[in-house]
Image (tube, rainbow, N blue to C red; front, top):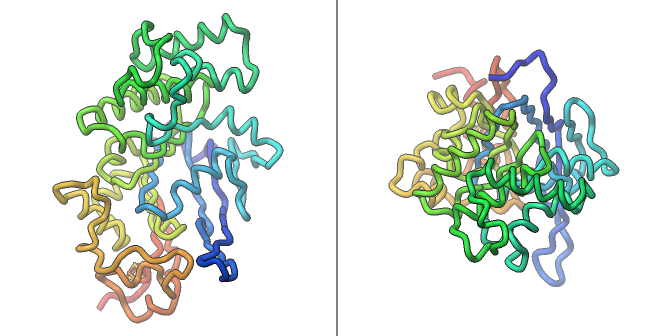
Length: 325
Ligand code: SF4
């Protein structure tokens, strides 16, 4: 899908994000490593599916990419150029978000026209007439009738509201769209319509997506590559077809098994994983996944896993360096 000779349109180089968290009124703050050194490369028109359970760092990563949070260390590069704190406004123009919940992400007191035009107003782009033209074009693009312009979010269905959120993201003519669980608040019947719309828009506008989801089945619909996150780290990354045909990390294997359960929206069932998600303030020693891993070895309990690279991606797991028995 991508041309490896061209630089990635979006790159994260060893990005970390640490928060200081208090667990009680009188306790000293302790570090929570929300991102523990994430490196990712996304090429133009690629869809990188970023998958993992709640609390794995997916949303922190989205905030860093959108310039809403500064990384503690590491770099974010767009077209090979580092985005610094000063350039956040430029970053905001080139990278736009679509959030999970169209009910809460749209201001109920604003008309649909004002909501879609808001990014243009905030960035002082165009005059009133040109903004109105842009808004009308966006409605056509996302398949909404012009008559909704003067209406309000509460007059629309969930799917229509998400179309408004997509129109608002695209009105800035971004290169990269961060889709943060864009269908998980919608009825199943509407989810596939929104996924199809996102796929069509990618083709038509040459967009690049980072598609964040807890649900591998949703990611499979669109992704060209998949990165699997666990406790702030990417534990496996591969082309989508390769990862779905032969997942290499035991956590990815468990996520895929959960897709086969009757209700994949329930996230990852613990029956496959043996233990609940660990406290990120006190992660397990060695491989952070070891208390839940069905294939755990003694070395996994004490020694962090190696980063094993291949021609198309990587996996962080001792199984891929230990001699087979
Ligand atoms: Fe499981 Fe060990 Fe691999 Fe971690 S390193 S995923 S515990 S086998």
